[in-house]
Structures are given as C-alpha cells and as structure tokens.
Amino acid sequence: MGCSYAARMCRNIRPLSNFEPPASDDEIRAAALQFIRKISGSTKPSRVNAEAFDRAVDEVAATSARLLDALVTTAPPKDREIEAAKARERSAARYAG
Image (cartoon, rainbow, N blue to C red; front, side, top):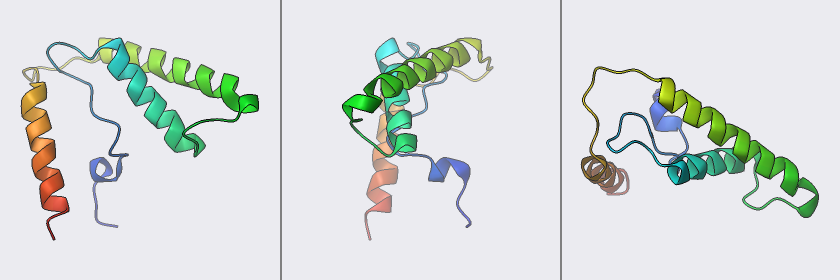
C-alpha cells in the first residue's frame, strides 16, 4: 500500500521524543499500555494473563524511557500545544469527507 509507516502506526500512540518539557513517566507508561493492548489484542487481560500483561507494560515503558533518554537531536524541542493543533487539523481533514 502507498501509506507511510507513520500513517500506519496506532493512532493512540503519540510520538514522545523531543518535547519540552520531556515526556513524563505517565505519558511513557500510557504509550506502553496502548502498545501492549494493540499487540495482545486485549484491552483488559484475563486474570490468568494479567501478570504477563502488566510485566510487558512495565518492560516496554522502561525500555521506552531509556530510548527517549538516549536519543539525540539538533532540532528544537516541539511544543505540545502546536503538535496537538496539527493533530486536530489532520483528524479534521481525515474525517471531512
């Protein structure tokens, strides 16, 4: 298909890199939770799978935090409000017709 990787990513997972202030632990954990929900196909695991699900969320969040700490860029930090406005514009255009 002709769409780019970014266009195919889960819409609930937002980029967290290069923001001022940096992404919070809560934002990182929320992204990890969305990722695990997506790949597991479950928004709420059964009791028998809850431990594995929670451990996966913890591991993905920890790995994501290390990644964000290690990334280097020369680009100026992004503003959350401006990025949110851009996302709203893209959404409006996507659902306009």
